[in-house]
Amino acid sequence: MRPKAGTIEYRLAFIISAKQQYLGKGSQKMIKRNAAVFTLIPLVSACAVTMTEPQDASPTPSIPEEVIAIAGPNQDLMSAFLRPEDSCYWYMHNGPVEKTPLPLRTADNRPICIQQPAEA
Image (tube, rainbow, N blue to C red; front, side, top):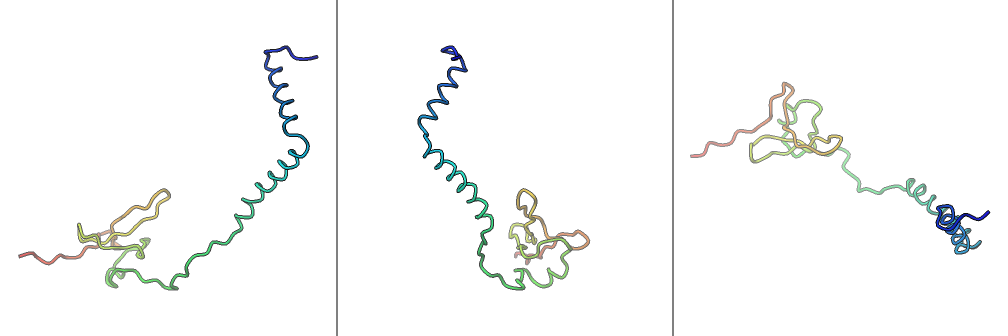
C-alpha cells in the first residue's frame, strides 16, 4: 500500500528512495570506510606525545631569598613578582577557572611589602 501524496509518510518514502538511488553500492562502502577513518583519527591523536622544551631541574623564583624565607605555605613562589603600584609582592593563583593575582603573605597572613625610600 502506497502512502497518500502530501503526507509525512509519503515525503519520508520519497527521501529514502532518492537517497538510495543517489548513494548506490559503491558510495555506501566509501561512507563506511570514511566513518572508520574519522573514528580512528581522534583515538590515535590522543596517544600522541606532545613535545615541550626542557625546563631546569630546579628553577629559581625572581624574588629575593629573604622573601622566600618569610613567605607562608601554599603559595606559588615561582610566579611571584613585585607590583610597583603598592610595592608588595604578589603571586598568580591558578584557580579552577582563571589565574588570579593574590598578595604574597607570611605564615601569619601579613602581606609582604618593601619599604620605599622617603621622597625629599
